[in-house]
Image (tube, rainbow, N blue to C red):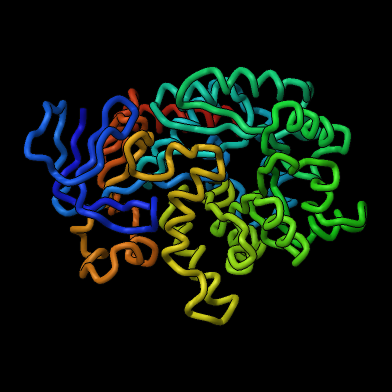
Length: 422
């Protein structure tokens, strides 16, 4: 059993609040949250928070982890050129070993950013799952069905396999995007959603051209097209959601679909700015993702939170827009619920022990006028003191504990890149 004491705890159940509670974890679960009792049990470890903040870790609700291999390789290009001229051709060269290595590299970055889970859509999922299990990291795989898949029926096999594989791995249904997936294959995804009563996800409304092209071909926007064939009958959501019409927003609100914003990627690819305040006002649930390192290029949740908030202010010409409290809730709670990890959305007994400690004793966190707004507006990776996943400390005070030395992973990643780009 591990004890966190003498600090602050960010809790969300019953309203966002910071308490002075102790938190005890055992195995992969939170066992106790409350005041210090008169008699303490025996602990395997006691962690003095020294006034620092314990919170449910950030959830990266949309990413392509192994795309670390393309970091700073294909920059300063519009989305379609970036995707078809750089990304797809080099992804075709990836081997399972490469995906394993590049995934573990990405996990290091997640941990140092306080991220405790990811929602990943990519390739070579056996290798991807192994990398997460071997690192002790929690992930949800999202199928990325598209026209390039040689065997679309593999999605059902993966759905059954990965949802029974390991406690750190689960699987959700999805397609890459409407513009990369033919109608027959989209309908197959719908069949699976209905068969398993499962939510479905897709890249949606990322660019203006994507939406206009879909309207020209089908007479509907991408969300409307997918909804018309039953894609969202059991929930789900979309990644990016930048170019959403009023009708699209109303559809998301009616269906309670998750809109996952990726502000850094959308800015770097000049895709646009998601209308988060309009989505929130309509009742659309929100979460945050980094997207992949090829289009970001960092996997840094503090940058995402800051931009998610401040971009709303500038687009709406209203400094009160993009409230920091809502953004922080999107990062911790919304992300967990968006990807099906409802037992990771709070610090409470029975929840999973996926926790992050933020060091408040750094210059950027002082003075402590408002701790939660400090995280969004002033926080950085330098404040991440500890990241725990499933009850295991995987990152603490600059050191990683994932069963492999970072320097060895860096060497392996650079060797794999030389093979891939030769």
